[in-house]
Length: 312
Ligand code: ARG
Image (cartoon, rainbow, N blue to C red; front, top):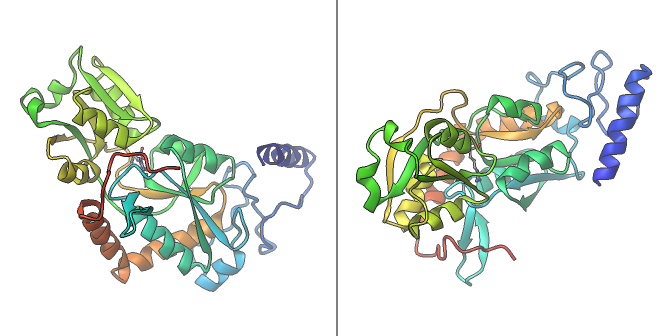
């Protein structure tokens, strides 16, 4: 797969050097005045088709995805109520959360079959860049540096950032200065903006980066950590199940507020389709319902073993 992608990229680069037009990528037929933009092409914006005024039917007709007819979505299910494993009546873990419900809505809206691939959060960027997934939905912040790896959808949710500790240590963390003391053990997730926040606001502390947010919560609860940077709604959700957790304060993150869908770079038709679906889900009340349902499920009696690894 990856080899093929590399070879394709090489071929593309070569053909561009030789100024050969139409090198036979897997992009759709596009209007003559707008040269096609295969997903593998360097995303310099040149030649990109503008789908912002296109109709849903036009977008659907132009859609290309990694697997024909499917929407392949990468997510990191350690992030209730965005995405997590819920336990059904039979005791089986199943993917749940408002990102998961929203992904299904987007797929239905675009007439695609949804395929979800769970992975570590920091893998999502790589998989998008490698062209293995169409979209990433994992409470992604539109951090400017990520714009080279993916296209951002419109913002669909606002999660806010916080510093979370345990109730026993609540008095140690009253002001933002309290977060920056030598000897403190402060965690954030690998590859997340929270790691940037940890390095910014806790530069003098020992900053630990962990693969999963659920690992962070488990280590907080077991007393191994002094605190962590986590999305506020996520910290609040886990605090409902683990009452020893304490959200100490909100932390400012002004450069990239809100959450977006990460769309494979250069797939303009899919980006437009995703944005259209996001708007529809907001307008028809579906998204508000997904959030409500995810919140209820993340705190419900059916939801067990929150921090256990549910992956096979
Ligand atoms: N919003 C943060 C970021 O984009 C964290 C997202 C983590 N998501 C997850 N599913 N663990 O960096």
